[in-house]
Length: 164
Image (tube, rainbow, N blue to C red):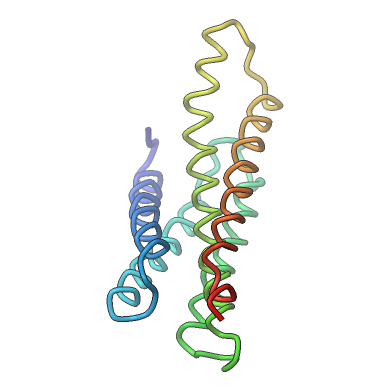
């Protein structure tokens, strides 16, 4: 559910980034399709993060989520920089790979945490568990940790270092 035009743009951009990121991650790298999808992913992620910085519904002010949006913005920008400049010459590909794949892992963690809280918290509330911000952050933390751990395994398994 969205509560504003900003929220709708955020949601649609996130879904576009989730889809293009998955295609990029599991398809062969390099080539025109990779490049085009990469730009779609990067613009989508920039939009996701910029709109995230405008959403204050959860706590009413700057919070943990905003800090992660800034981290994600940095990662996407660095990943793009390495791909566009191809610098440093010897390591640009590895740097590009890690910045972009970790940006996708972060997006997946945010997606799972957001979806999870919308499913888990109502499930618990229906069984008499009282909502608290501590419970909210515990669900977000556990789900995010699970995704980041899985992401680490997949990122390392598909690393360009493994092919070198």
